Image 1 (cartoon, rainbow, N blue to C red):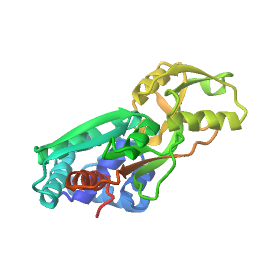
Image 2: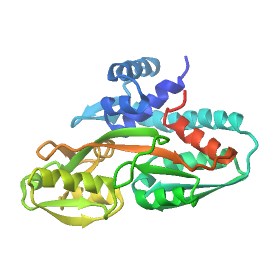
Image 3: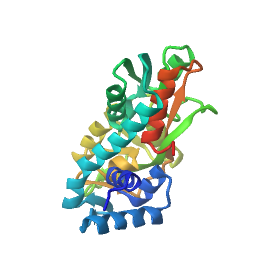
Length: 286
């Protein structure tokens, strides 16, 4: 009996997205293959790891106990590979993160890189996609993790980390979706999710008012929990959120959001190593 890395990565993806469909997109497998992997895991441990609640996959007691072990096993695997692929590097690597991506797994991934390569200083800058893209183009950054859109053109060298649909988050018992003007919680100007949300409302002829402004998605979800507004956010953050958040189907359809890795034209061992570890963590390197 053994816990397989690929199965554990799929388990974590389902837990974090709250959906077999979105987990399948993250791990580049079909939903049927994801379901089969979860059944295999459940047969191995002799208990269900998820329960379906309010349309989302929620961790069972067994799944909740497994989660910290899964994270440690996956991190140990990725850390070992990173150490073997680039064992002796030092110096500095400068990375830029869009503010909305700070709430993803990236801080955990960067911390793991620092443990493997204590001789490398990781310098982190946070900002919007436009600012980070400009810094990268003028050699102010080595790597940028960008949310595509928001006026930032796509480049051929961009490497996809993950994509998922944006959805409307609303309070479960709210009638806000039918209120006009529609109260919305959004980030400041320059956020692709804001542009997508307001653009969809304009095209649908829905009058709106910005009632809550924050560049932190958890703060926007707090506004939804308090029934102050609706918010357009990645599906995984809505489905994995706590009660009483749900997805509204009464508002215009939203596009997918994509997170990409972009490197500067200057490449060295530090940049290549960190880029490889990020791609590996998101399943973009076999």
